[in-house]
Image (cartoon, rainbow, N blue to C red; front, side, top):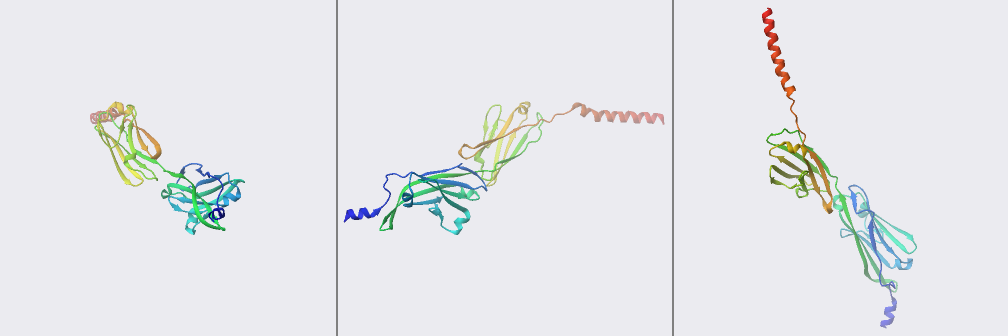
Length: 270
């Protein structure tokens, strides 16, 4: 009786099933679509019919095979099945109009279905793979860096850094080009750095030079954004020098002397 029962239970006659999950790139821009491929190679049509494939997005179940589970899910996702070869099946899931909340993982789970008398009696997980969704931020720098004069007491460089993916002060550094020194918010020798978070996507950071000397006009400074997964972006600045023109300063004085002399001559003539 036990033998007959075992024979009536149908499943795949193979020890392993290969599941591959990939995307063209794990990085995606805001508003773009993101497609992942769940590929199950080496199975013929009969064997594939004995599998159940499910897509998940950050733990939310989306499909049974490539059938989306609700009208709400259909608005955000699409799924198609392709068979490039007779023994090779792929289920392509697309996430539409990527937003910040979509960051995370897409997971493909593959189950083997066991039947008894043409009725499914259990599903056994035989493969699970995930692929990350990483969203590129739209990073922008807007800096105010006016001219400075040697031996003036202070010079300020203020930068607004904006990233649609979210940003915080602990991702920002200033770097001095000639020495390679990095400055996080705080006070240093002749340098003071501040930072404040204006919104979730905007910070304002300021580099203050307490005493401007000639060396600072030969030195570059950078605002450095250290994003996720070693994504680093530098914005380079240099301090423009305000030159004084001695000749230009003398001209008004000479004009005044000339006016006085001319007035004296006219008085004598009268």
